[in-house]
Image (cartoon, rainbow, N blue to C red; front, side, top):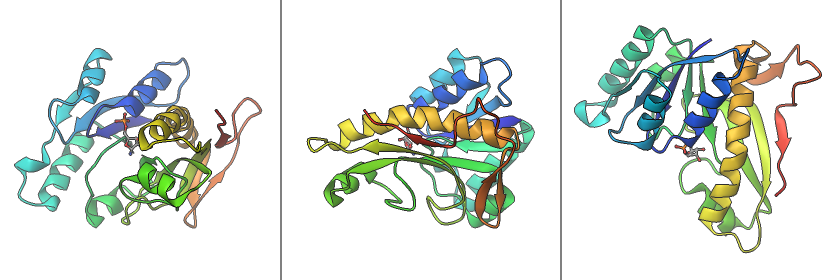
Length: 214
Ligand code: GRF
């Protein structure tokens, strides 16, 4: 399956996907990496991996529709079949989301549907939750909403700061994003009635739920 990865920053999840795709028999290949911000770390990671990459700077466009149009055009030109948003910090128009319905994944650093939006780790600590985690889901028009493919649970320690919790969750993100991509690319995770159903998982495959104590 031909994958386009959308980024806005450092690209550690992109790197996890690059590493997974480099494994023998992995059912997906990253054909393009697109950043809406110039000079970000993720572009260097794509360059180092020899993956075509480009900047489509949202500031160069008058409105969301024209930015999303350019994004769509670039993805189509690269032959993308599935989008993986990985730290991509732009809200997409309903039209774009519908066009790529069930063909776009996102990763979010909480156990959705809790803590959608920004400042997730601060809000998780503020709320006093004992377990947080991360979620890979299909993208819908509402931010951080959509059928869930995989989740990992990560403990929140009493002395955690937003950055120590973020670092612990990031380790789990790097495990579940490749796992979710594999299952989707193999057709083993499919959306049925706004939920993801699994079929054909073999004995060697991990369940798409990870408990990740540290
Ligand atoms: C990750 O925590 C991801 O869940 C969130 O933004 C962060 C991106 O990190 N959406 P990176 O660019 O993949 O390192």
